[in-house]
Image (cartoon, rainbow, N blue to C red; front, side, top):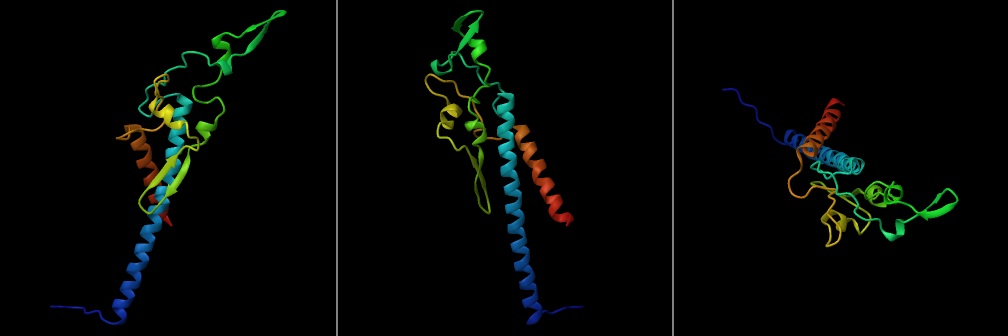
Length: 165
């Protein structure tokens, strides 16, 4: 029987390489999670473009024109209140762009990534109120298939990049 025994400096060298591997794993995980955070923000932006929830269900249209958005229009020589369709040229939930553009990666740890909006009123739109329908921007519970596939693809791309170096 052939046997190899490592001791002393051989064990120290193995421990050194094991520590390097652990650090590389930690860095790779953080790189993947950072990339996934950016991908999540992009998926939220795509929902705003489509005016749809993560599961593809279209957001409910605005039912009435808020007083703040009522505008006046010159009709010949007279001024009149603009019709609802004329005054509502703004996409749903995008009047100022603060809600859409406020989605950012907020926290990155060794095991998770968190994205969140910078505006406090986002929760009202996500869940709805007694007078406003819910317009989901992020999934609740299980990820929709499209989101899951997109994140899987993004993670695989990062892994390919890390291992090709």
